[in-house]
Length: 343
Figure 1 (cartoon, rainbow, N blue to C red):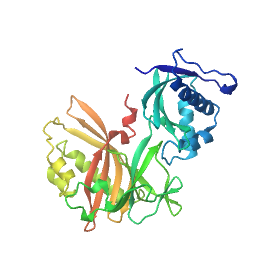
Figure 2: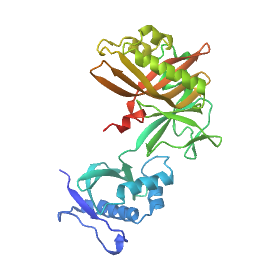
Figure 3: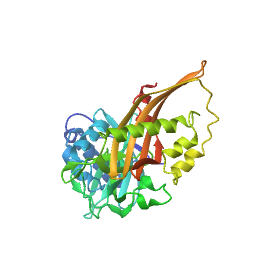
Figure 4: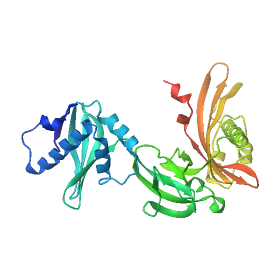
């Protein structure tokens, strides 16, 4: 069983005080170097030497976080920590991973990576950091937090956008280049020719779709709201499957799933109402393809029991013959700001 050790932190330069303690005297020789490195790293963090810590992180993790985001993340983890405990979790010949704790609560990990000259570099592994897939319209050149996407980050080129893979025939789906973004602290800034791109995070995966922000397209927004209401009416037994078929690409996994839904579980009701319908964002992936987040509240009552549902849909749309149709759907009530008010 791996031992737990402690680092005592102070808001002054720790190196001059030597305030670095461990909770056991049985320290093996091979642990001395990691202990010293962790001490030095945490000294830099607690003394707000963020730029040095940021620059060192690139020797441990391939990431595209900007300095400002990295500073905020470091401050969020370490700013109120007076004592940090650490425990070796995993290691091999070239790397070590430590769990870091404050008051027995794990706050992050710390990775130690051996360099070519035999030295070691350290970086914080934040609890909320993610690896993203960035899907960019084929032919569009983009930069992420100022770094141009090139073959170093490329996974696949000129393939159907993943939110359209539920179509039986993906020939009409937009083509994209897929890039890998590792260890991202938050959603990055994506630009093309110096201009901000529209971007949408998938509600079911760590995918970010890039395109043109079309949120101000009122006609499309009204269509999306109409489609969302139609889809919500079906499980509530207020609309038949034919109504859903009329707004959907029927040759799709989405339609096969929704048309097979059993709606006899929904309690009969005499009163219902839709309210607070809003399209939060629309991103056009091409002239004939889009993805949008739409929210609404649905109230139903049978006279003795009533309930309000705070709903959120992420809708993938395809324009065929001049008409937008639903090609896919993700359901996520957390998109709805009213859902966050529920305690």
